[in-house]
Structures are given as structure tokens and as C-alpha cells.
Figure 1: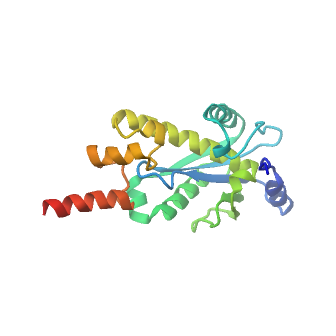
Figure 2: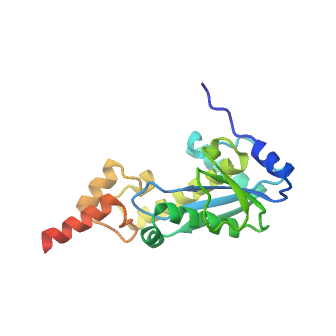
Length: 212
């Protein structure tokens, strides 16, 4: 059965409850072994909603890039990150939530309601909101946020790939592909790797046990 495209039913419901400024929020980069986690908050404006919005994972790279440009042009957008150091200090879930809160706080108009992708609300929410499981496939605002977050983070990883060749980050975005894991064994751990993630921790720990 084909997945239906996201629509604005969550946005309409929030508006009917009195919300005036509604933002969709999504993050990308929980699973990779390297790089930041990136979140985006998007406020779609009436009559200025790009056609064809969908969960970023359901779109081709070319379509994502085109929609990224349209969203940046037509909507209010804020992108924020949590660094590798913050991921290691807090854990990936808390760091993802931190990036989401930062994205909401960075919007030009302060939102009074947020639609959050996932099953849990960040602790330090600057406004009311709700968590929507698979929200990027259901809400237009979250779908738009998922596209901007994905394109932004992919570009960051392409830049990092040029500084650290061999790991294939321009292709795998830091996810633990065979190529990436082989490069870790051959080239070692970089400053952009998440030390709290088991594969990285194990490499560093093994190195220490061998040398001690």
C-alpha cells in the first residue's frame, strides 16, 4: 500500500486550538558514527507552501535539493546543531533534543506551537507542542523540516569528507557502512567521530589495551 503524502491536518488542528505560529521540527543524524546531529524548524506560511513536500527519505537527492531551495525561499526556517562533543557528553537523544530546541529558538517569529517528529518531546521546549511518530510522513511542516535538515547535514559531511578523505562521508554521511568501518580500522578515529558510540569506543579502548 502506497504511503499517503503528508498534509496539514496537524497544523489545522493546532490552529483550531488557538495556535498562531506553528513550526514543524525534525532532526537528522542520530545513527552516524561521525558528525553533528542537525535539526530544523520550519514555519510554513499560508499560500506559500512548496508543492511536493514529503519525508526526506522518500525523495531523491535531486528532488530534496530543489525543495530545499523552495522551502528556504518561501518559509521561515531555522537550522541548528549539537556537536560531537555535546553528543558524547549528553547522549544522542538529549543532543538531538538540544538541537531541536535550538532550531525552534532560532526562528524569526517565536512559535507558540511545535510539531515534533518522534515519540518524545524535548525537555526544554520553548513553546507548547506535540510529538508525532513518523511525523515527517504526516505533517507538511515536519516534512519540510526533514528536507532542510537532511540537505544541510549532508553538505556538512561532504565538507568534512574533503578534510578527512577515505571514510566516504560524502557518500555515507557518517553512517557505519562497510567502507566507513574499514577506514576506521585503517586510518583511525578522527576528531569528528562520536566517542560514546560503541564501534568508536571499542576501537579506542582496544588500542589502549594493546598499548598498555
